[in-house]
Image 1 (tube, rainbow, N blue to C red):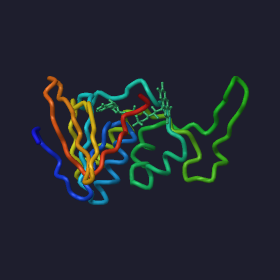
Image 2: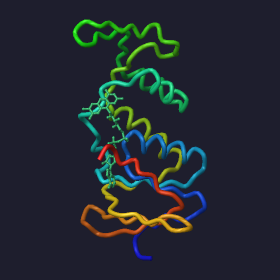
Image 3: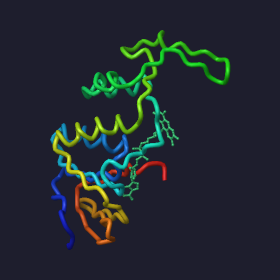
Length: 168
Ligand SMILES: Cc1cc2nc3c(=O)[nH]c(=O)nc-3n(C[C@H](O)[C@H](O)[C@H](O)COP(=O)(O)OP(=O)(O)OC[C@H]3O[C@@H](n4cnc5c(N)ncnc54)[C@H](O)[C@@H]3O)c2cc1C
């Protein structure tokens, strides 16, 4: 097998494709559990999904809280306890049975930054400007084909691959 930086195929090693919120959360959870994990992301580092989510709901905050990240995001976001939908329908989030009885207005890149820091601190290996172009599975794992920003091919090997590559 050719390629650079091949992930060792251990019985548990995982390649996560995509470093949006889904891939970042999973990478952090796996790394925290001691699973060797490599994240492949086609974007350059810190080129975020800038134009996307502007707020997170209570259940998302509960999930972030379970990973020790909610308080720092609460400190920089703006809580909204009441929403008005479709021009007239009022929603009172203050009645939610949650520690978080509000919608937290916070840009997605702040949530991603916190999730990425947690994953890195737990030992996840991030490779930016690496676009996955193919994947084959066999009896012992997966072979992932990727290209760096100059179009140079790479081959990586792991026990599992997880597609967290978004809607498309
Ligand atoms: C306009 C808009 C507004 C939104 N507002 C909200 C909101 O207010 N609150 C909320 O909770 N959600 C909101 N969402 C939804 C939220 O943005 C998505 O649910 C979230 O981004 C999904 O995360 P993800 O990690 O699954 O996918 P993505 O964020 O799409 O991440 C996928 C990642 O995979 C990478 N990738 C793709 N293909 C490859 C490849 N072949 N190789 C390597 N990397 C690859 C991409 O570059 C990307 O970084 C909004 C979405 C949009 C579009």
